[in-house]
Image 1 (cartoon, rainbow, N blue to C red):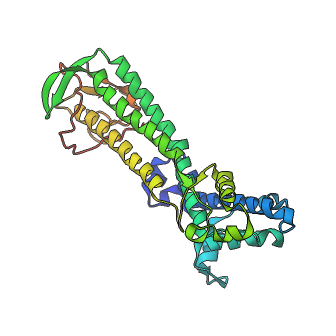
Image 2: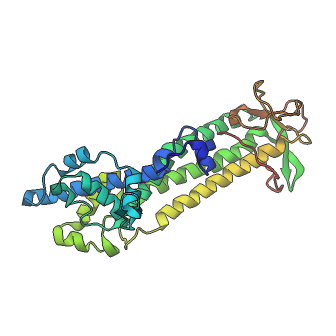
Image 3: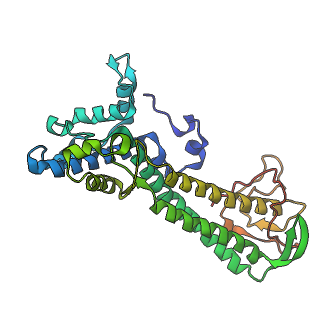
Length: 340
């Protein structure tokens, strides 16, 4: 499989916005392969703990798996799934089964025969997806949202007495303060952060097999529901869904995605307010200057577009109507590239 550098990729997330590759560790295809491997390892461990006392599995199956299969390469999985005419490999045309085959080939027979028992593919896929989305939001997005919230609080407190004009229906209304204007976003973003944390804690996994009825697990174990908890909590510290079919109930994950849309809406409103107030004909908010930045390749008088920390934004002291609360009635024709 051809290896691409970041500037050969199609998505701007890859070559522009995820510069530290933080999201790659959770949302890339390699990350997905790793999360599925971790699930299968926890599944194997739970099976071995129950079957080893009966002499049906090696007690050290988990350790043997980890030694044999510490990492799974995605290109191997794709070859096992799709086939390779050059090598004569015929693909199985099933993504999860292909990964199980790749892992089984690395393990000794005693361990290989236990892989993926007694689950179905969407136990692994669904739970791995939930876990990686949860981790991406919890470890990357939430800390950045909290940092933005702290900056907004700092501005709201610092500018609590800075008088400016308020607006309704795009027109000057009664006086407010710039701190009061920013406190709107403190409230709205803070509410979203609290909701996101709650929704992340409500995400669920599954290890209930085909149709979600624990049929296969019930044949092997007396405690299929305890077995399910052992698997999903052991893999990702998730609780199992109280009911599942072949797939997980979609609502917990969808609620989380809906909350992310609300977060995007709050940041979009804030961005629009600030970019409108920076327009030359309004000029009520300015950004602290950085002599190394330029705003145009040819117009030397043009200030840089907003692209730094929001904490550098301050009310313009040379304007009698410095800043406003809201310009949501105005349709912005451009959006700032603000880095939070």
